[in-house]
Length: 159
Image 1 (cartoon, rainbow, N blue to C red):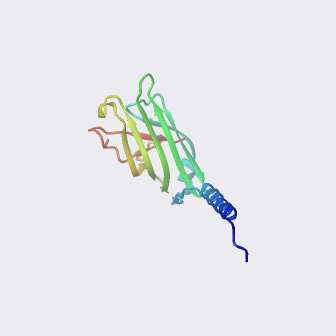
Image 2: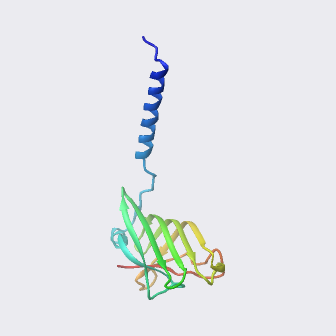
Image 3: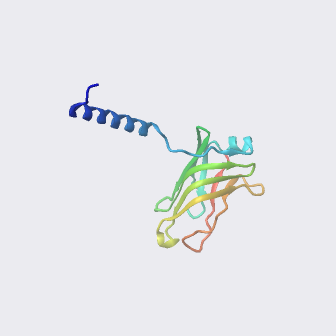
């Protein structure tokens, strides 16, 4: 058997490094598959929806979009104030879908000029959106603003 020279060793190291980098680039972040207890509710969720926070406007809506990839449901939304810096954003994964509610794991950030001294307020973790009564939207159930004494009505409307 021949021993590998320095040049050969360096070549093997570079090949291994390239293979490791390629494998790392191909791997995607793992997201849990959604638990669907009601297929009609899942179909209602998929797609683009009007999105709002009452402090910004119920006349000028933002947009929230639910997409599906590899058995996971993702949601991303935002609404901006008109003529000011008020904003609400959400980003995360839907982990459970029931007939009148869904569970979301992610982040919702609100920034309203007259709440929390106009600074961003971040909610992270598991949150629930629910339909109550005859309403035509899902409302965030964790309404208490964690940064101020306010109730935030974050709503995602049916298509």
